[in-house]
Length: 464
Image (cartoon, rainbow, N blue to C red; front, side, top):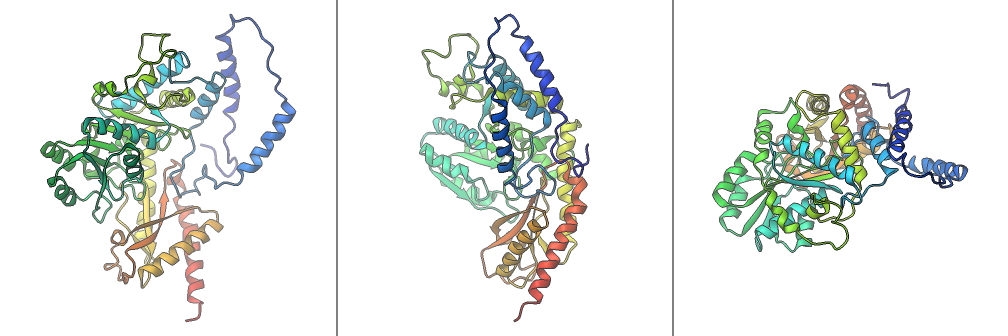
């Protein structure tokens, strides 16, 4: 791995793209020559330099010092494969528009499905977790018409929004103090009836918490609801070798859910615009059935547009995912799996430092690679104010964290001797999802320490 201090943006792989373009072009050598379109290289160079200048107005998402939101750079092979496909610009709606890329999508999705033991399934790529969850809940609504959808209060807000779009009743179920769906609260609601689908979140976006899947499966046996797993963020951690025993029990049962969402553009090293929805029962494809008078005639094989709500979709996304999984297979102990274990190790290392420091109050230990904490203070409101100040000071020192407004129970204010004058607390949050983060924890901690010292010293110097 190159030292990021000597080269921030990886560029060596560009030579591979030129050679691959020559190989791609050779496949069309039998076509008569045509005049290449004028490239206007000077004008394009000027515009691209302007683009480069404009793109500097971003946080450094690619760098380990960006440890805030869920932003992870795509693997170089994904970038190259996506760019290579753009010279063809395939459309994976129908085989007419993307024959090779459609086959690659089916192969890549099948490899993801096999992670969870699904040799038979229905699934495809889509624009992201929102659209993937929409399709899962749309199918659930067709199978359980008139019944409600429930998810935890820490589930992604998209479930409530999507339920509204689909005309489904939605209810939020309280969480326990470690951010998981509260089983007793859920059972009380199930006793009232009319629940069609329960959403289990496998890696909440705020804290990375994992809902208690074995217990939810037992409740499904009793109450007969559909169980949908929103594993958009956490799904790939099935391959990590350093999960807690409780988390491992949940992942070991993940293949028993009815439907699932996983986002390759999160931990799957893909550019944005690559989500995946999977159904354990392939016969739900009947709900997608439709006729098209002009798109489904080139082949008797299944067109992806026949099993998805979206129509035109970028074949380049499928090509990039296929290439990445070819280079980094989804196998336990492999390089891809080791990357996931490394991100969790980074989170545990930061958590241990925070827990040992009297200046901070940590939430529960991270289940995946997300760490949440708040400064120690006399009141919850004061802790929230200091958190915002440390966030800003760390950014000035080029360490970019995130803020999260969370239930105050997550940090146990009574145990931390903080007066509870608010029901929520502003926490600092770090998503350590880059494989490099493990090696950078000491430098991240150094800046966090300096930023915290500076903020606390300024507060001590304030009058009153």
